[in-house]
Image 1 (cartoon, helix red, strand yellow):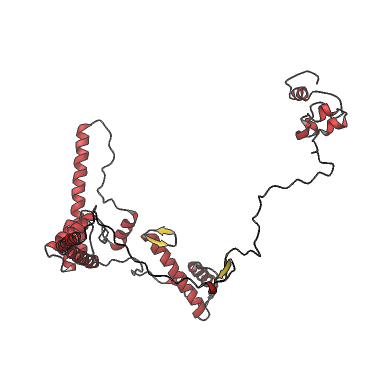
Image 2 (tube, one colour):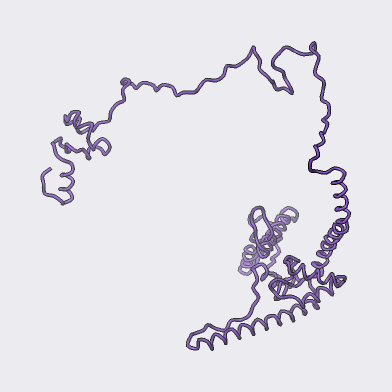
Length: 358
C-alpha cells in the first residue's frame, strides 16, 4: 500500500488521489499562466462546462470566452494511471493458464456438489457456485486495469523464491522474457502469480548478490574454523587471566600555586560547586497557610431554613429542615402562610394518596 502521511490507502484510491492532485495542479497553473483564465474559486470544472453550455444554448453567448469546455471532447482510450505493461504473447500465456486453472476448480466444485446431492437428496441446495480466484481488492483492481484474470506481482512468497532458485540451478534464468512465459506454467493463483520481465530482472540481481554472499561465507568456513582453533591454542579462554588494557594518561594535576581557593568554579558559563558567600539556604517544607477569617467571625456560618426562621421555629427546626437545600416550599414544618404542618402528609394529600390533614 502507498502512504499519504498517516493515511494508508490501496492502489485504486491512490490513483484517484493522484488524479485529483494532477487536476488541481493543472487548474492552478492555468490560473497563474493563462491570460484571461477565470478564477472560479473551486476545482469542479465540469460545473462550469455545464453552465457555459447552458448559457450558450439559451442566449447564444459565451459566459467565459477564454474557457475551453473539456466536456465537449470525446473520450479517448488513453490511461494515466495503472496501465498494462505485458506483451501480447505473455497475455495469451496468462489467459490460457487461468482458463485451465478455472476449469479444474469448476470441475472440483461440481464434483463436491454432486457428491453432496447424492448424500442428502432431500436437502435444498443453492445455485451452482462459479469458480473464481480468491484475490484481495487491490489485486482485483490490478486485474481490471491490466486486463488479466490474475495480477502480475513481484516476488513476495516463499514458493515463488524457491521456484526461481530451481530455475537458476538449471541455468534457465538468463532470458527474462522467456522465463516470464515459462513461469506461467507454474502459476496456481494462490502462492505463485504471473511475473513481468522487469520483476524477474530485479529479483535476479538480488538473488545473484545473495548467492555471492552465501558462496563467500561457505568458502571461508574452513579457514575460519582453522583460524579459530589457532587462536584457542595461542590464547585459550579457560583459565587465562584477562590482559589489562592500559588507559591513556590524563592531564597532570595543577601545581598548588596554580590552584584557586574559591570552592566554586565557572565552567562554560555554569557555576560548579558551592559559593560560601552567596549560598542559598535549603528550602523548607511547604505547608498550607491559615484560612482568612470570616467577616462575621472565625466560626463558620450555618445554613438554615428561611421559612422556619421567619415563622419563629427556633434553632430546633431551622437548622434541621428540608428547606435548607430544597427551598421554602420544601419546609418540613411550616406552609406558605406560616402555619405548622407536616410536609410528608401535605405531599401525600396533594397526590391523592392520603386524606389526612397535614
